[in-house]
Image 1 (spheres, rainbow, N blue to C red):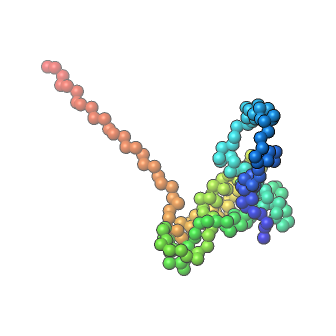
Image 2 (image 1 turned 60 degrees about the vertical axis):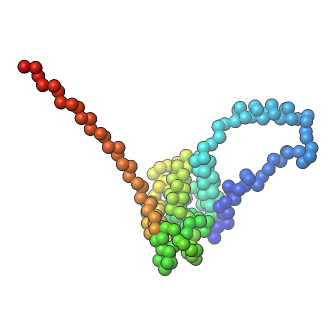
Image 3 (image 1 turned 120 degrees about the vertical axis):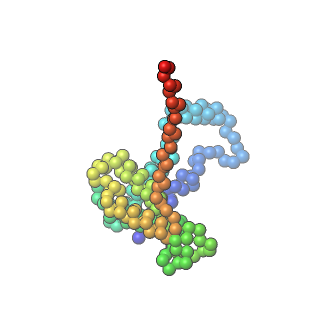
Length: 198
């Protein structure tokens, strides 16, 4: 339905090499010192590198923007609704790598299946939940209003909750957060006061 190519954005930089590199077996000695000086100046003036989270958020936002452009008809960000977000999440399932057992599968509810099965691969709930969190932040960072943020809509929250419950049962694992045990405070026993002198 969509010619999105979800992984094209992450591999594009890996495929491009240096455009101005000299041929193999030759060395440009005349420009080596000036290149080193220019490189040092560029390194000192370059902005700090993005964190892993910020880099991933930027890639996710670019991917979603490409999805909107490839939509038929194309969509602008202001036209995007929670229905389009859900459509995008379901589209991503074809790239999932998590085995979700069906009710008819003998390994339904088995956390460690002993053999392969033909059950479908889907995006894991944790991946989708983290993706929505990054896109929700990116939407507001790019001028969107919190009250109209489609990534924070109730329909999206309900969908993620349903995915979590289905995958938890199918995979036989729990997504519930473990409650941290409060450290037990040891009561200090003070010795009784000495008896008063007569």
